[in-house]
Length: 438
Image (cartoon, rainbow, N blue to C red; front, side, top):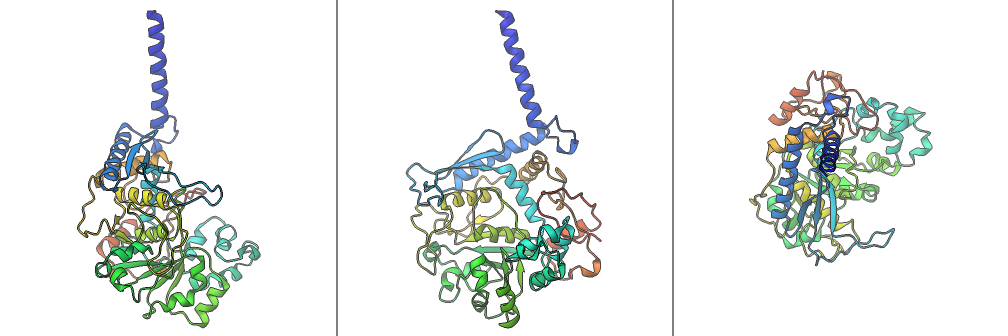
């Protein structure tokens, strides 16, 4: 019997050792990706913090741990009535959603230190960037034979393709992203919204006649394919001609013609986006992504995130089918509990509301280091604003935008990356950090 007991103990010890080897990455040949006990403690602290934060601030949402320290499941109360049906299967949206907080904290850090505007420098930096990427950003680009005639591709993109990024990380201070939810009509956020340094709006959402609810200021406007095709109508929403229009899909010959002939005075760019897997969908998430790439803090308004959601409404038009609303609300709550955004809604209307149990900056930083190692990201575990980058493209100083007038955080960011070491470009690793380094 004692032999059997010893054998059982040995087997358990062997299995535990195998698990530890798997978790800590001791089998990795590159020490930079090795996950230490301190890293695992940081991930455990992050997971616990996110769970407490969701439970305290989620207005009925509950978060529980998953199979490891990277997994969090956010659950709705059992009496929640889902409304969205999968268009392929016809099945109703579920009431529980699994999220990988390691992937989220690492990916969003990358966003915060990268450009999200497509530039010529970005395309040039990619291996075969024109042949394998550029033509995909042109409507019917397949007819261009993968940009074999680069001049023709350049001509199609020229009106929306700056040489270098027009904006840098942390260039702006407090920013607000305004969604189009009908919930805005239950609020009086207009004056509050106008107090931000930057306001980002979506698609063709009007301001006139709704200023009490949505404010007057508009700095950027993110456009989906449908809104971009009506670029002239969207431009009319801004009488100043200073609102920057950012198209998240492709440039179209019709759009180019409107820019030239209408003419459209507003700056127009294409967005260089990141993939967030099965997270929240739609223009709203992309607007948050853009804001997080250029702003110090980001607040969101006009996203349907309160319980009791019963229909898809926009504040300026009739009800309409939307994206997975329950999944989106859960994802945005996770973003708030990672310290990325602050949610404002009819049930969270107090501008001084404190997000309880928000993980500390030191916890988030340590967890990001660990997450980057587990995901084997280039520069994993490094400090500073270049840690999440796949490659740093050195610019010709003569082409670098003017630094004068930048906020101190943005200036510090650019000063840090000056003279930085080049990282190797690995295929399919994500976005590039397009920052001046010469």
